[in-house]
Image (cartoon, rainbow, N blue to C red; front, side, top):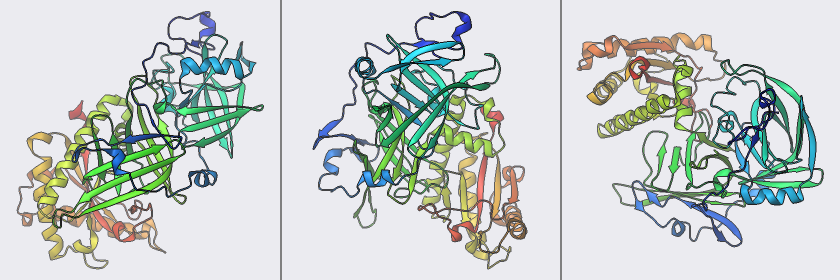
Amino acid sequence: MTMKKRTFQILSLALVCLLVFSLCSCGKEENSNKAETENGNLVWYLGGNNVFAGDVDVKELFEGYEDTIDPEKIYSSLELTEEMIHGVYTLNNKEKDIKTVRKEIPFEDVAFDNVTANISILPVAVYLGSGNICSSETGYNYGEFENITDKEVAVLEFATKDSTGQTPCIYEINGNKITFTSIDQTSGEDEPFAYKLSDAVFTYDFELRGPYMTLSKGGHSLKLKAYCLTENTKDTLSMNGYSLPNSPLIGDLDYFASANAWNYAVKRDGSYVDLSAYKIDDTGRFTVYLSERDMVSGETEKFVNQYAYIIQSAASVYGNDFGVILFDGNKAYYYTDDITDREARSLAEQGANVNDLTEEEIKEIAEKKSDLFDDLYKEFEAQGIDVTINRSNGEIAMDSSVLFGGDSAVITADGKTLINKFLKAYTSIIYNEKYDGFISKTMVEGHTAPVAGSTYENSLALSQERAENVKDYCLSADTGIDNSKLSSTLEATGLSNSKPAYNSDGEIDMAACRRVSFRFIVNLDNQA
């Protein structure tokens, strides 16, 4: 059992790797993000400071809307996976509630190799997922568990008679049971993390409803709460939800963010929603409010919908971030990425070794790329250029039906006009002073639809030929632009039907699959 103590160690060096104690945080200020009570339920409102709409009364936005879902019905039909429950669940106020736990929850002796610890039979905090293990609340180092890719990892925190103790684990879900197996580190401090399984195994009945995870054993239960909504943090709520690739979308939203000082929502194509707000209650209802004003008619279109939810909360006294998974009874909508997670995946796909970059470096690249997409979107919109931006995977796609006729790879007259307009706008942005040196090359990628009977092999030639023809035309004098910078940085590849396009329902969009896309590659050497 590996346990950690923030102020001093009380065990010999031989036992430090097995058992270190973690003192509960004390003397914390009142949580500055208290919930409101409505009809006996806790309610949180987000979205008061909109980037575009200014200050709004969020509570007023939701007046008159009735509840439309029964969250209990949705939760009872969910099949939870280990990845779904990434996040941190803890006592609402660890300093105060730990005293009640010691009075009401039995203790037991648990053997961890050479150490036997007397701990509560139920954990007082659960840190699920490698990203949450490494937090200020556990004391484990970033990257310590990154090599554990075969199993999901967690840290359990138990009450002891006068403190708390933590142990790293792997975990698995089987129906309404969750099993944690303690692990012991077998590598040195300067080596990649390696582990072996311990004989200490913890199995609980568990239930997840909205912000609460209830664990039960031996006739005793403990209801833990998503860390971001507890009294353990000094910070206000900060929701940051980037959609996972191929996830269904809420109102076509790619991501949304809401904190005390700002609130905004961005669609998959890069456009921003005029007004966004959110209402969360502790019965499991998550209500989304979006509104957009038509610039021509002046009419406002509203989107209000309600979902059951699971919060994926981080854990930090001075940081209160969380993402969400939303459920409508049929689909799961994943808004659980953050900006660095998304960019790390994108960089890995372009062949970069993300382990050579710090989290801060990845974040800086992601933020600059986001600015670049913003600028491209504005320029395309201003010039009336019909392309589709997918900020999730970095594609800027052209409809093959405009570029080509039927199954031909010959570019049509309309296709050439579109490419001409696109290149003028694209190069004016990526080669301006703001982004000078940021991009190393641009990929032209040909795609086909995964229609019945098609295979990767029999569709590859057409996708490759289309990509090559578009590339050749881009480098020709017919475009009317100075393509000297493009000539050494433009590459073409055919991807056949290997990367289908998905609609906002998370289903394959056959028409959108037939495309030629442009995707820029970040110059990592220049960023370093």
